[in-house]
Length: 301
Image 1 (cartoon, one colour):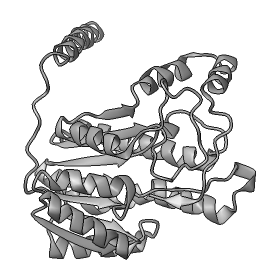
Image 2 (cartoon, rainbow, N blue to C red):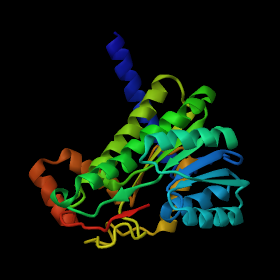
Image 3 (cartoon, rainbow, N blue to C red):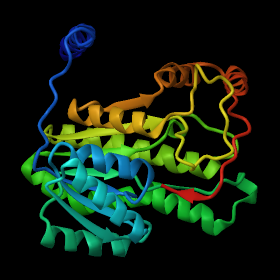
Image 4 (cartoon, rainbow, N blue to C red):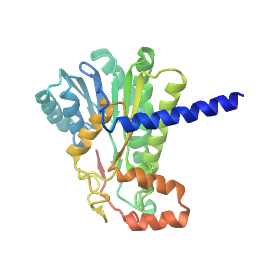
Protein backbone atom coordinates (compact mmCIF):
# COMPACT_ATOMS: atom_id res chain seq x y z
CA UNK A 1 0.00 0.00 0.00
CA UNK A 2 2.84 2.40 0.84
CA UNK A 3 4.43 1.70 -2.54
CA UNK A 4 1.14 2.47 -4.32
CA UNK A 5 0.51 5.68 -2.36
CA UNK A 6 4.04 7.00 -2.71
CA UNK A 7 4.08 6.20 -6.44
CA UNK A 8 0.77 8.00 -6.88
CA UNK A 9 2.12 10.96 -4.93
CA UNK A 10 5.21 11.15 -7.18
CA UNK A 11 3.08 10.99 -10.33
CA UNK A 12 0.67 13.70 -9.15
CA UNK A 13 3.46 15.99 -7.97
CA UNK A 14 5.33 15.48 -11.24
CA UNK A 15 2.23 16.54 -13.16
CA UNK A 16 1.84 19.59 -10.92
CA UNK A 17 5.51 20.58 -11.30
CA UNK A 18 5.15 20.42 -15.09
CA UNK A 19 2.00 22.57 -14.92
CA UNK A 20 3.81 24.99 -12.61
CA UNK A 21 6.74 25.20 -15.04
CA UNK A 22 4.33 25.88 -17.93
CA UNK A 23 2.63 28.66 -15.95
CA UNK A 24 6.00 30.33 -15.36
CA UNK A 25 6.41 30.75 -19.12
CA UNK A 26 3.71 33.41 -18.83
CA UNK A 27 3.93 34.50 -15.19
CA UNK A 28 7.53 35.29 -14.15
CA UNK A 29 8.79 33.86 -10.86
CA UNK A 30 8.97 36.50 -8.15
CA UNK A 31 12.57 37.53 -7.50
CA UNK A 32 13.83 37.53 -3.95
CA UNK A 33 15.34 40.55 -2.20
CA UNK A 34 19.03 40.11 -1.36
CA UNK A 35 19.79 43.64 -0.12
CA UNK A 36 22.12 43.48 2.87
CA UNK A 37 23.15 39.85 2.25
CA UNK A 38 26.86 39.07 2.66
CA UNK A 39 28.06 37.68 -0.68
CA UNK A 40 31.47 36.02 -1.05
CA UNK A 41 32.81 35.52 -4.58
CA UNK A 42 35.98 33.52 -5.21
CA UNK A 43 38.05 34.41 -8.28
CA UNK A 44 36.55 37.90 -8.27
CA UNK A 45 39.61 39.74 -9.60
CA UNK A 46 38.56 39.42 -13.24
CA UNK A 47 36.20 37.81 -15.73
CA UNK A 48 32.87 36.41 -14.60
CA UNK A 49 33.82 36.92 -10.96
CA UNK A 50 34.18 40.66 -11.48
CA UNK A 51 30.94 40.89 -13.44
CA UNK A 52 29.12 38.89 -10.78
CA UNK A 53 30.42 41.30 -8.13
CA UNK A 54 28.92 44.20 -10.07
CA UNK A 55 25.61 42.36 -10.47
CA UNK A 56 25.37 41.61 -6.75
CA UNK A 57 26.49 45.15 -5.91
CA UNK A 58 23.53 46.57 -7.83
CA UNK A 59 21.25 44.80 -5.33
CA UNK A 60 22.79 46.54 -2.32
CA UNK A 61 24.69 43.56 -0.94
CA UNK A 62 27.82 43.44 1.21
CA UNK A 63 30.57 42.02 -1.00
CA UNK A 64 33.51 39.87 0.06
CA UNK A 65 36.05 39.43 -2.73
CA UNK A 66 38.59 36.59 -2.81
CA UNK A 67 41.37 36.23 -5.36
CA UNK A 68 45.13 35.76 -5.70
CA UNK A 69 45.31 38.95 -7.80
CA UNK A 70 45.43 41.97 -5.50
CA UNK A 71 45.34 44.55 -8.29
CA UNK A 72 42.46 42.80 -9.98
CA UNK A 73 40.47 42.82 -6.75
CA UNK A 74 41.12 46.53 -6.27
CA UNK A 75 39.60 47.23 -9.66
CA UNK A 76 36.65 44.94 -8.94
CA UNK A 77 36.07 46.65 -5.58
CA UNK A 78 36.09 50.05 -7.27
CA UNK A 79 33.54 48.93 -9.88
CA UNK A 80 31.38 47.24 -7.24
CA UNK A 81 31.19 50.41 -5.16
CA UNK A 82 30.19 52.36 -8.24
CA UNK A 83 27.48 49.75 -8.89
CA UNK A 84 25.92 50.23 -5.46
CA UNK A 85 27.51 47.75 -3.02
CA UNK A 86 26.85 48.79 0.57
CA UNK A 87 30.33 47.58 1.59
CA UNK A 88 33.20 45.81 -0.17
CA UNK A 89 35.89 43.73 1.56
CA UNK A 90 38.85 42.23 -0.32
CA UNK A 91 41.04 39.32 0.80
CA UNK A 92 43.99 37.63 -0.83
CA UNK A 93 43.26 33.90 -0.78
CA UNK A 94 44.58 30.94 -2.72
CA UNK A 95 41.53 28.67 -2.82
CA UNK A 96 43.67 25.66 -3.69
CA UNK A 97 45.18 25.79 -0.18
CA UNK A 98 42.80 24.32 2.40
CA UNK A 99 44.53 25.90 5.39
CA UNK A 100 44.50 29.31 3.73
CA UNK A 101 40.79 29.00 2.92
CA UNK A 102 40.00 28.22 6.55
CA UNK A 103 42.28 31.00 7.84
CA UNK A 104 40.83 33.69 5.58
CA UNK A 105 37.29 32.40 6.19
CA UNK A 106 37.76 32.91 9.94
CA UNK A 107 39.03 36.42 9.25
CA UNK A 108 35.93 37.16 7.14
CA UNK A 109 33.61 35.92 9.87
CA UNK A 110 35.35 38.13 12.43
CA UNK A 111 35.54 41.26 10.29
CA UNK A 112 32.39 41.06 8.14
CA UNK A 113 30.07 38.43 9.61
CA UNK A 114 28.44 35.24 8.37
CA UNK A 115 28.40 34.75 4.61
CA UNK A 116 24.86 34.09 3.36
CA UNK A 117 25.58 33.78 -0.40
CA UNK A 118 28.67 31.84 -1.47
CA UNK A 119 29.74 31.97 -5.12
CA UNK A 120 32.43 29.42 -5.97
CA UNK A 121 33.76 30.91 -9.18
CA UNK A 122 37.56 30.53 -9.05
CA UNK A 123 38.83 28.15 -11.70
CA UNK A 124 41.84 27.07 -13.71
CA UNK A 125 42.39 25.24 -17.01
CA UNK A 126 45.72 23.70 -18.03
CA UNK A 127 45.07 23.77 -21.76
CA UNK A 128 46.92 20.48 -22.35
CA UNK A 129 45.89 17.00 -23.41
CA UNK A 130 45.89 14.48 -20.58
CA UNK A 131 49.21 12.79 -21.38
CA UNK A 132 50.91 16.16 -21.94
CA UNK A 133 49.72 17.75 -18.69
CA UNK A 134 52.28 17.75 -15.84
CA UNK A 135 51.09 16.09 -12.64
CA UNK A 136 51.43 19.38 -10.77
CA UNK A 137 48.97 21.14 -13.12
CA UNK A 138 46.48 18.28 -12.93
CA UNK A 139 46.61 18.45 -9.13
CA UNK A 140 46.21 22.22 -9.19
CA UNK A 141 43.16 21.92 -11.48
CA UNK A 142 41.47 19.55 -9.04
CA UNK A 143 42.44 21.67 -6.04
CA UNK A 144 41.05 24.92 -7.48
CA UNK A 145 38.05 23.66 -9.46
CA UNK A 146 36.80 20.97 -7.09
CA UNK A 147 38.43 20.70 -3.68
CA UNK A 148 38.19 24.45 -2.99
CA UNK A 149 34.40 24.01 -3.01
CA UNK A 150 34.68 21.47 -0.20
CA UNK A 151 36.67 23.86 1.97
CA UNK A 152 34.50 26.93 1.37
CA UNK A 153 31.35 24.90 2.11
CA UNK A 154 32.94 23.60 5.31
CA UNK A 155 33.78 27.15 6.31
CA UNK A 156 30.52 28.95 5.54
CA UNK A 157 27.73 26.37 5.31
CA UNK A 158 27.34 25.78 9.09
CA UNK A 159 26.02 29.32 9.65
CA UNK A 160 23.60 28.95 6.71
CA UNK A 161 22.32 25.67 8.16
CA UNK A 162 21.93 27.18 11.62
CA UNK A 163 19.86 30.03 10.17
CA UNK A 164 18.18 27.88 7.50
CA UNK A 165 18.99 30.72 5.15
CA UNK A 166 21.57 31.08 2.40
CA UNK A 167 22.52 30.33 -1.18
CA UNK A 168 25.33 28.19 -2.60
CA UNK A 169 26.32 29.08 -6.17
CA UNK A 170 28.68 26.83 -8.12
CA UNK A 171 30.06 28.24 -11.36
CA UNK A 172 30.82 24.93 -13.06
CA UNK A 173 30.77 24.26 -16.80
CA UNK A 174 29.02 22.31 -19.54
CA UNK A 175 32.31 20.37 -19.42
CA UNK A 176 31.01 19.14 -16.07
CA UNK A 177 28.16 17.39 -17.89
CA UNK A 178 29.75 16.32 -21.17
CA UNK A 179 33.31 15.11 -21.73
CA UNK A 180 35.46 17.16 -24.11
CA UNK A 181 38.62 15.92 -25.85
CA UNK A 182 41.70 17.85 -24.73
CA UNK A 183 40.14 18.91 -21.42
CA UNK A 184 40.32 15.68 -19.41
CA UNK A 185 41.48 17.17 -16.11
CA UNK A 186 39.19 20.20 -16.49
CA UNK A 187 36.17 17.99 -17.23
CA UNK A 188 36.98 15.74 -14.28
CA UNK A 189 37.21 18.73 -11.96
CA UNK A 190 33.94 20.23 -13.20
CA UNK A 191 32.11 16.88 -13.10
CA UNK A 192 33.28 16.73 -9.48
CA UNK A 193 32.06 20.26 -8.75
CA UNK A 194 28.62 19.54 -10.23
CA UNK A 195 28.24 16.23 -8.38
CA UNK A 196 29.39 17.76 -5.11
CA UNK A 197 27.02 20.73 -5.29
CA UNK A 198 24.08 18.55 -6.31
CA UNK A 199 24.72 16.05 -3.50
CA UNK A 200 25.03 18.73 -0.82
CA UNK A 201 21.82 20.30 -2.11
CA UNK A 202 20.05 16.96 -1.63
CA UNK A 203 21.56 16.56 1.85
CA UNK A 204 20.14 19.94 2.82
CA UNK A 205 16.68 18.97 1.59
CA UNK A 206 16.89 15.63 3.42
CA UNK A 207 17.62 17.42 6.68
CA UNK A 208 14.81 19.92 6.21
CA UNK A 209 17.07 22.91 5.49
CA UNK A 210 15.04 24.09 2.53
CA UNK A 211 16.00 27.70 3.22
CA UNK A 212 19.52 27.07 1.91
CA UNK A 213 19.31 27.17 -1.88
CA UNK A 214 21.65 25.76 -4.51
CA UNK A 215 22.39 27.06 -8.01
CA UNK A 216 24.68 25.07 -10.32
CA UNK A 217 25.79 26.95 -13.45
CA UNK A 218 27.01 25.01 -16.49
CA UNK A 219 27.84 27.36 -19.36
CA UNK A 220 29.47 26.55 -22.68
CA UNK A 221 32.76 28.34 -23.42
CA UNK A 222 32.74 32.00 -22.36
CA UNK A 223 34.67 34.71 -24.15
CA UNK A 224 36.89 35.66 -21.19
CA UNK A 225 40.23 34.52 -22.63
CA UNK A 226 40.21 31.33 -20.58
CA UNK A 227 39.51 29.19 -23.64
CA UNK A 228 41.48 31.06 -26.28
CA UNK A 229 41.98 28.60 -29.12
CA UNK A 230 38.62 26.89 -28.69
CA UNK A 231 36.22 27.49 -31.54
CA UNK A 232 32.61 26.55 -31.98
CA UNK A 233 31.66 24.46 -34.99
CA UNK A 234 28.03 25.61 -35.00
CA UNK A 235 27.78 29.17 -33.64
CA UNK A 236 23.98 29.24 -33.78
CA UNK A 237 23.66 25.99 -31.83
CA UNK A 238 26.62 26.43 -29.45
CA UNK A 239 27.73 30.07 -29.46
CA UNK A 240 30.78 31.29 -27.56
CA UNK A 241 29.02 33.12 -24.75
CA UNK A 242 29.53 36.78 -23.89
CA UNK A 243 30.52 37.38 -20.24
CA UNK A 244 27.92 40.12 -19.57
CA UNK A 245 25.12 37.85 -20.76
CA UNK A 246 26.31 34.96 -18.57
CA UNK A 247 26.62 37.16 -15.47
CA UNK A 248 23.09 38.50 -15.90
CA UNK A 249 21.65 35.00 -16.39
CA UNK A 250 23.44 33.77 -13.27
CA UNK A 251 22.05 36.70 -11.29
CA UNK A 252 18.55 35.94 -12.52
CA UNK A 253 18.97 32.27 -11.57
CA UNK A 254 20.06 33.20 -8.04
CA UNK A 255 17.18 35.63 -7.55
CA UNK A 256 14.64 32.99 -8.65
CA UNK A 257 16.29 30.05 -6.82
CA UNK A 258 16.92 28.17 -10.07
CA UNK A 259 18.85 24.99 -9.27
CA UNK A 260 20.41 24.26 -12.68
CA UNK A 261 21.36 26.91 -15.24
CA UNK A 262 22.72 25.54 -18.52
CA UNK A 263 23.86 27.99 -21.20
CA UNK A 264 23.00 28.14 -24.03
CA UNK A 265 19.64 26.34 -23.82
CA UNK A 266 20.81 23.75 -26.37
CA UNK A 267 23.00 22.26 -23.62
CA UNK A 268 19.85 20.89 -21.94
CA UNK A 269 19.08 18.79 -25.00
CA UNK A 270 22.70 17.77 -25.63
CA UNK A 271 23.08 16.62 -22.00
CA UNK A 272 19.95 14.48 -22.28
CA UNK A 273 21.08 12.93 -25.58
CA UNK A 274 24.51 12.18 -24.15
CA UNK A 275 22.93 10.19 -21.32
CA UNK A 276 20.46 8.17 -23.40
CA UNK A 277 22.40 7.40 -26.59
CA UNK A 278 24.69 4.40 -26.94
CA UNK A 279 28.43 5.11 -26.98
CA UNK A 280 28.89 5.01 -30.77
CA UNK A 281 26.10 7.55 -31.15
CA UNK A 282 27.55 9.66 -28.35
CA UNK A 283 30.97 9.79 -30.02
CA UNK A 284 29.27 10.63 -33.31
CA UNK A 285 27.41 13.46 -31.58
CA UNK A 286 30.66 14.72 -30.04
CA UNK A 287 32.30 14.79 -33.46
CA UNK A 288 29.30 16.58 -34.97
CA UNK A 289 29.39 19.23 -32.23
CA UNK A 290 33.15 19.76 -32.57
CA UNK A 291 34.03 18.44 -29.10
CA UNK A 292 36.97 16.30 -30.21
CA UNK A 293 39.70 18.90 -30.55
CA UNK A 294 39.41 21.74 -28.05
CA UNK A 295 42.62 23.35 -26.81
CA UNK A 296 43.02 26.31 -24.49
CA UNK A 297 45.80 28.13 -22.74
CA UNK A 298 46.69 27.86 -19.05
CA UNK A 299 44.71 30.47 -17.18
CA UNK A 300 42.54 31.17 -14.15
CA UNK A 301 39.19 32.80 -13.72
